[in-house]
Image 1 (tube, one colour):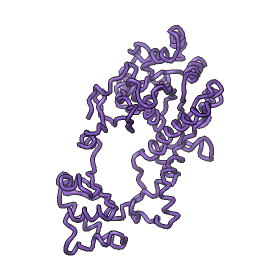
Image 2 (spheres, rainbow, N blue to C red):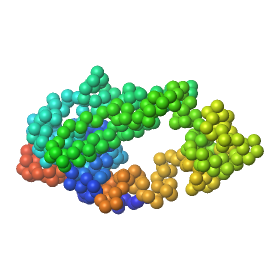
Image 3 (tube, rainbow, N blue to C red):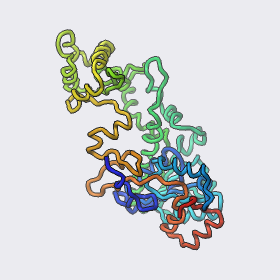
Image 4 (tube, helix red, strand yellow):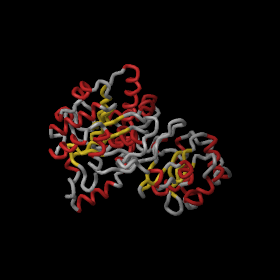
Length: 416
C-alpha cells in the first residue's frame, strides 16, 4: 500500500494537478452523497475543482469553538471531499452569489445537487450560468430527476433503488430486500452517472463549442444498471421468486459459503470447466459426488448440491481454503473486510489502496497509460481555502477582503 507521501497536496487540499482531466476547471456547489463522490472522481482524474461550501459550516477568524475544531477533525475522514480546496460563500447574500457567478465564468463544469428549483431561486440556475458562460457543462445531481411526480420529494439511496425496481430483486427467501449499503443508488447509479454525463458533455463540447445541462438522477442511473435483469425478464429466464435466480444465489456454483471459523468465501464458477476444477479441488468429483458436474445445468438439483458444498466449506477455515484455492481456475475469492482488502497481496501489488494523512482509502481509478492520475489529495474542511482559492481563480486581494468583511465569504478559523 502506498505511503502518505503519495498523497501530498499543494497546500490547498488538492493533489498536484495531473491526469487526463488536467486543465478542466470545475465549480462544485457542496452537497452530500453522490454529488461529492462524482466530483471526487473528477478531481482524482486531474480536474481543478473548487468546492463552494456554506458559510454556516465554518468558523470565522480566531473564534473557532471546541465543537468546530472537533468537526474539522471529523472532516479529516470525509474522504469524498478529498483533493479540492473549499471556499465558503453565502449564497443568500448578493455578493456571495456574484462571487459564485465569477467562479462559473472561469469554469468548464458546474455541479449542483440541490432539489429542483433551488439553484434557480439562488440565482445560480442553468439559464443564468449558461447565459454568462455558453461553454459551461451544468451538471445536476438529484434522486428523482428534475421533473416528474416525485421530482421535489426528499429521499435517500434506499428510496431511489426501490423506485427503480432494483431493491425488490435483492430479496432472500424469508427476508425483506436488503440494499447493498448505499453503493447502488448514491454511487453506482448516482455519482458515476454524473461523471459519465460530464465527460460526455465535455467531449461533445469539443465539437460544438457549446455547453449544456446534464440531468443525472439516481433513479435513472439505477434503472440503467438493471438492463440485464430486464432482458432476462423479457426472455423468461428471471424468476420473481426470491432466491431462485443464479444472481440471487440459487446456484451452488455461484454462491457464498461459510467456513469453519465463521468467515465466508465467494464462488463464481459459472463456466463448466471452472466448476469442474472447483469440485475436484474440494474433493467432490468421485463416488457419490461424481454426478455433481453433470447436474450443473439442472436447477432441480441445486438445493441439495448447495447443502453438499456448504458442508464441505465448513470443514476448513478461511485461510485454509484461500491457500488451497487462490490462484486456481475456480473463480474463488475470500470474502474480506474493508481493512483486510487494503492488505490483500493483490491489492497491495496494484496499489488499489493508499494511505493519505494516516487514513487508508481507495486510490484514484481507473488507470491511464499516458496521463496517469495524480495521488489522492486529503479531505478539506469547509472554507479552509476561501482566500487562497478565490485568488487562484482570479479575484484580487482587495475583492476577497470586501467579501470577507461583508460576510458574503468566510475563511475557516485558524487557516489563511
